[in-house]
Amino acid sequence: MNIIADKLYGIILLLPCAYIASMGIEQRIEQRIMEVAGYLDDLPAITVIHNIQTWNVVYMCRKGLKLLDITMEGLIGLGKGYHDRYFDAEDSKVNVPKIFALLERNDNEEMISYFQQVKVRNKEWQPWLSATRIYMRDDAGKPLLTITVTVPVDTQHNLSFKVERLLEENTFFREHTRAFASLSKREQQILRLMAQDKTSSGIAGNLHLSEDTVKTHRRNVKKKIGAQNQYDVVRFAQAFDLL
Image 1 (cartoon, rainbow, N blue to C red):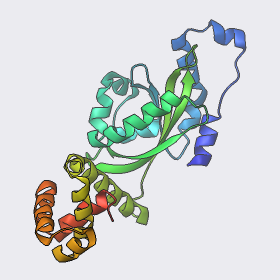
Image 2: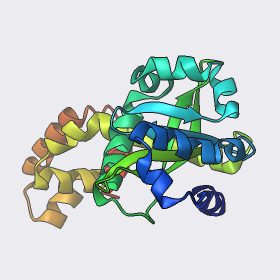
Image 3: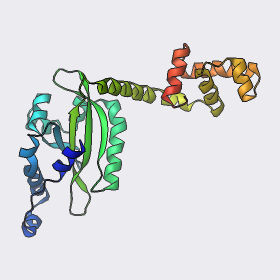
Image 4: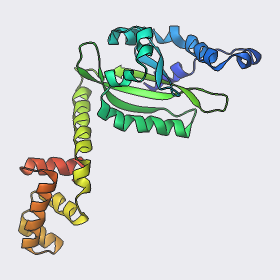
C-alpha cells in the first residue's frame, strides 16, 4: 500500500509558474485531477479525490464508478449524500475525526489509514482498507483536496476474519461506551476480577472489602453493563482493555 501511495502521490507534472499563477482555483483543481486521472485508472485500487471545502467527490477512477454503478456526474450530484449512501455511519464517527486531524496538522508527508465498511452494487457491506492524504492546497497553504486509495479486504484471506472481528469489537465498544463511563473506578476493578472468574470471597480478599460489599458491587456492575452471563462480562471487560 505504501509503495502504491508513494507512486500515486508523487505524480506531479511541472507547469510554468507564471501559467499556474494565472489559473483560477477551479482550473487548478481540474488541472491536478487531469494530471493523474489516466494513471489512476490503471492502478489495482479505487482512488477518490475530495474537495474538502464542500466535502464533495470531484474525481473517482473508472473502476470505482463501475463498482458503485454510478456515473461521475451522478456521483458529483449526490454531494454529501455520497457518504450516507455508501458508508457506514458508525465507521464515519471514528474515521472522520482522524481525517480532520490530518487536515489540521497539514503535514505534506503524512498519510492515515483506516478500515471502513462500504456498500457496493450488491447492497452488502464489505470491509475496505483506505489510505488518505492531502493532495492539493490553496493559495494560503491550507488543504483543499484530499486523495484516498482504497482496496477491498480479500474475503478468502485470513485477514478478513480478523478485520470482521475488529469491526465487531469496534461496534461493541462504541455501543457500550456510555455504560462503561457509568462505572466507578471500584466497579471497574470488580468487573476486571469478575471477568477473571473470581468468586465474591476471592474478590473481597483481593480488594480488602467485605464479601457483602463485593456482592452488591457485582449486582450493580452486571446491571450497568447489561450482562446476563459470564460471557457478557468477559466480552465487556475485553472491549475496554480490562483483561
